[in-house]
Length: 126
Image 1 (cartoon, rainbow, N blue to C red):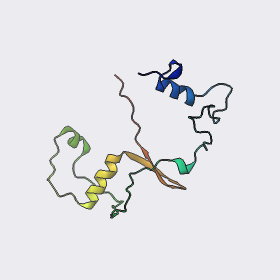
Image 2: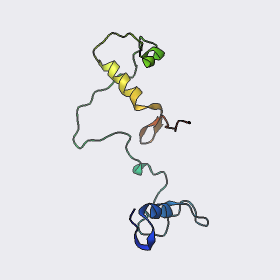
Image 3: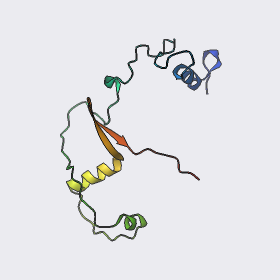
């Protein structure tokens, strides 16, 4: 890692400028010109989008909210022993595939739209 002026690395500097310090309120920014000084905590205008956006509008297709069921038990599918006949991917099955692969476990209505909550990733204990 390259060191900057003062002998600290970029990651050390980022840690120092964004860490809590005793004696300074947690919402008060560090006195450094590289740190945003007028931060408004929980400002909805600064939240990132939950989905990818494109410059020109693309055609949209509403997906069904009612997801179709499956014929095979989950344990059989995971074990590789399920016997499922091949079928074409239709719109309800595509909706199911996209919904389940996104990892959304619940949503919340917010003033700026619907906020998805995804499955948390945890390290697997040894």
